[in-house]
Image (tube, rainbow, N blue to C red; front, side, top):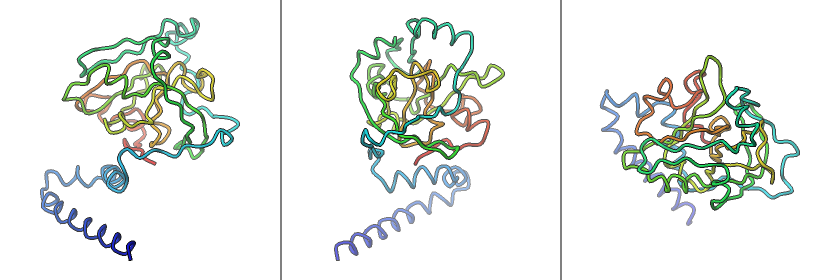
Length: 250
């Protein structure tokens, strides 16, 4: 009886929501944006689940024997090789844009901040998955230290891997994912410092999205109010150049 009442309440609630949206949908100026496949994917997933719900975490005995590299396996640029040779002692993560307190953080400083460890599954858009143990600093901690301005809506990640023609990898997420407790700036995989293939010295882990959102070789983080000026305006390298969805929720 309880389950039937719950289902009825959900149906009635959904009906009320759709009725309210109908008036908006009649506006030709907003219809295309509202009902694009990407927005429907993002909104439907978030409407049906807790916005702070955790991705599944696994036991240590479930770790994959090999954690494959997704995307670039080595930036291999002169600039990257220079910081690699020093063990990334000269590397700095810059945090700027719409913040009150721009930051420049060394790897040692990040290691000294509170950490989070999580064993999660990486799902690649190419069709493979792997389970790994990640350790890193919650992105929310860094953003709070930088003091986001009220206008900030998205967090953009700029990376060291040259995708050809001087175009460096970039990605972005919104503040919902940026402040999710499992979104971390990871510097270790399976209790070892990140290898070059897996994104050394620092990579993003945004556990409720597909692998191409997990930007590697992080160099800069920027808070912005719009994605219009980022690349071709779709929010990420593969979104701009291969038509991938900006929101890659799983």
